[in-house]
Length: 291
Image (tube, rainbow, N blue to C red; front, side, top):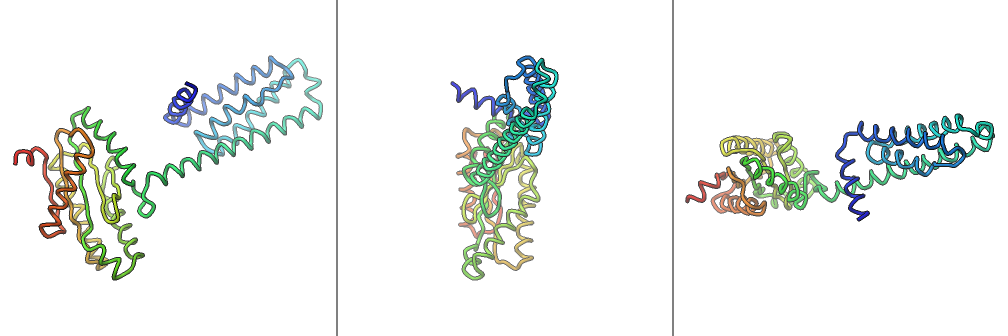
């Protein structure tokens, strides 16, 4: 029960913009300051960790540090106006405020570091380490969402499966460092021509997949022809004897699963391989069904 509440809270705040999190944290600080004023000498510093940690986790490290200062300043103002004003002016009181500031600062830095490490781990888990694009597992997760959206709004969806021809020859003849450079260039060439809503993934050693949401047959054919030409030009510029076998399928009415789209595009790519390589074979699913 507590885990579900925690997860929902984190998911909700993660979806909020930074200004919203800051506004919530400022409100919490104000409430804590008022409580501090009413309770007098009782320290509520542990509760100040809530707004500080929220900002440090969901906004940034500098913002978290700024809220540490705000928290201690709020404590100081509340104490100054409380009934025990004379006691609060004792040197020990200011030492306690300093210690509380150090406590909040350390915790804020820890929360920020944990968030950075978590984000880094998520990135490594979802991206291909060489090219920086999505790996196969992350692609299926995002593609599933796009497919559900296409089904809901009855939008067309297109997928292209790209396999590099003669890539092994490059590795064998010129070395793996050149092969890595080639793969990066392929990724950069595709990424520079796709829309922000399109998805590119490296599926294997020399296999890439592009998902084009809301892309009907005519638009997909034009786009994929352009991509194929751009890739050929990039290889020619480096004098690399590499071609691109591309199988692509457009579904005017999205199918039931991402697996179905991937398998169809993969099958078309192998048809290109068997028929001579280095060309684009693109179909609309209804045409294929009709024979």
